[in-house]
Amino acid sequence: MIGSTGVNVVLGAIVSHKLLQLSFQGIALGARYALVALGFVVIFRATQAINFAQGGLVVAGAYLTYNAYHTWDAPFWLAVLFGMLGTALIGALIERLVLRRMVGQPTFTVIMITIGLLFVINELVTTVWGTDTLALNDPWGIKTKNALDVTVLVKDLWTIGLAAAVLLGFFLFFRYSRMGVAMRATAVDQEAALAQGISVRRVFALSWAISGLVAALAGVTLASGPGNLNPNIGLIALAAFPAMILGGLDSPGGAVIGGLVIGLTQVLTAGYQSDLGLDSLGAGFKDVVPYVVMVLILLVRPYGLFGTKEVRRV
Image (cartoon, rainbow, N blue to C red; front, side, top):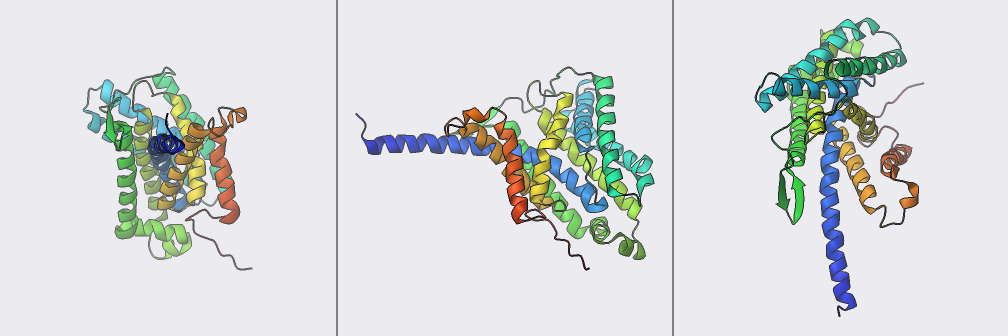
C-alpha cells in the first residue's frame, strides 16, 4: 500500500502537471486576447474612443488571409501579409470616409458608429464568404511539442511569440519613431499637437491602419487549426474587452498583461471548476469570471493596472 506521504507526492505531481498544462493554455489564450486588446488601445490612445468595430476587423483579416492562401495559392506568410495590409487599408478607409466627419462630435456618437460598423463588416463578410465553417489549413495544424512533460500546440507557441513581437514593435514605434512620438503627443493634447505642426488627421488614419494590422494577426491566430474559421471569431473582441479595461485603456503593455490575466483566469476556472465543487454555477461560469476580476480591479484601480490617471482641476 502507498502511505499518506506517497499519496501526497503523487497528488502533488498530478496537480502540478495539470496546473502547468492549464497555465500554458491560459497564456496562449491570453496572447490572443492581447492581440485584440492592442487594437483597441491604439485607437483609444489616438482618438479617446473605444472601437467596437475591432471584432469586425479581426474577422475581415482572417478571411482575407484565407482568400489569398486558398484562392490565389499564395504562400502562407505572404497570405498573412496580404491579410494584414488589406485590413489596414479597411481601417484607414473607415477613418477617412466615416470617422473623419465625426471630428469634434461627442465620443458617445463615435462609439455608436463603431458598433454600427461592426455589423456592417460582419454582414459583408458573410455575404462574400458565407457562414459555413472553413479550414484555414495553416502550417501549424495540430502539431504539438513537449516541454516539461507538458503537451503544447505549435500554433499556441506561435501565438505567444507573435504577441511578444507585436508588443516589442509597439514599444519601439511609440518610443523612437517620429510618427510614434506624434501619436503620443496627440493622445495627450490634440490642440497642442496641432500647434506643433502635427497632422492629427494623419495620426488618426495611421492609428486605424495599425489597428487593422494587429486585428488581422489576431484573426489568423484565432482561425488557426482545423475548422476554426467562421464569422463568430469576431466575438473574441467582447472577451478581450475586460483585458483592455483591466490593463488600462491607453497602455499597450497593460493590454498584454490584461490579456494574460483574463486568459489564465478563464482556463484555470474551467479546469478546476469541478475540483472545487462549482459545477452548479454552470459551464458558462468561466466566461463570467473575467468580468468579475475586471470589476474587482477597477474598484481598487479605476484606470486599470497601467492606465494613465486623469487629473482634472475644478
